[in-house]
Image 1 (cartoon, helix red, strand yellow):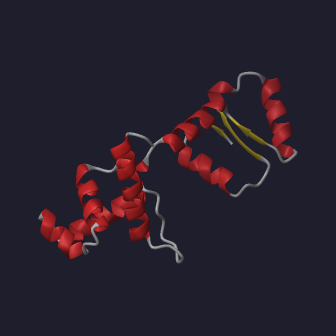
Image 2: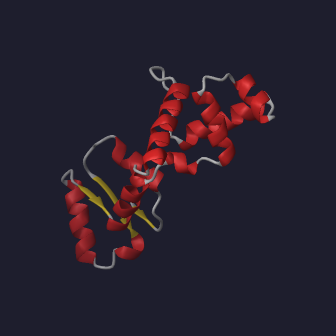
Length: 142
């Protein structure tokens, strides 16, 4: 794939299946026709060619802590979830309608990249992420 932009989510999907013969190059960085031809040959042989700028973004993305993306309100909802509170109880405590609590929880799941899965309980996984993050904050380490 030749692209003008680094799209981390697309790059991750492209690489997710582990299949060979994958390439993600940025148009503005492919200035030498010999380099492009070499990349195409490697991809055709089942190799992978990823632009260094794409790799840098992906590595940087992995090092971020998803909890840092939560708003203060989402953090408050997650903290009450960690206390075992129901959506109704969270709404009562924070002065929100139940639908608003549900919207915050959906945002939390999305930001923590907790997709629906038959074998997983996203609420528990979100609470575990919160607890791990609380330990990081208390110790000052990641």
